[in-house]
Image (cartoon, rainbow, N blue to C red; front, side):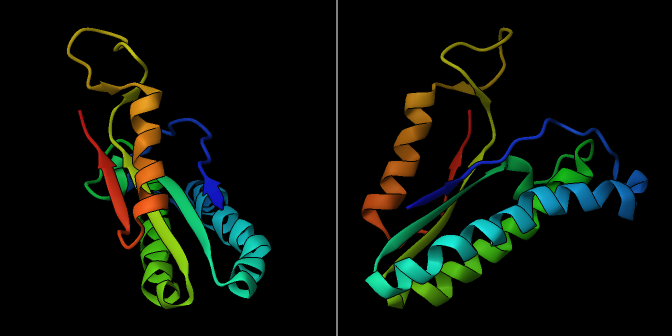
Length: 142
């Protein structure tokens, strides 16, 4: 099993401010990091005929937040690639899926009214994707 959840902070970049220079680190961190990690484990999974590849994105991978344009673009690219993995590796026993976390992670919110989810609740989404198989995504909303 591979679980890939990189986090390098929230880089506030509006869509009109996205450049190659501020998008490149997001793509390298999120997409290239995931491709590298999968390259390290996929041959063994294919040889075994089983495995699980789980990836974390933010909710902006699905419904973008304008203030996180570069991060959301990279997360959307990761999400697309993982869904393609799901569609092509399932018949070979490999589960590939994303968990889009669209809430503050914590047992209590940082301020009243902020959507949040406890780490144990979020972990259940990963476990369900691993054990139930066949699904390619779970979204954690508040």
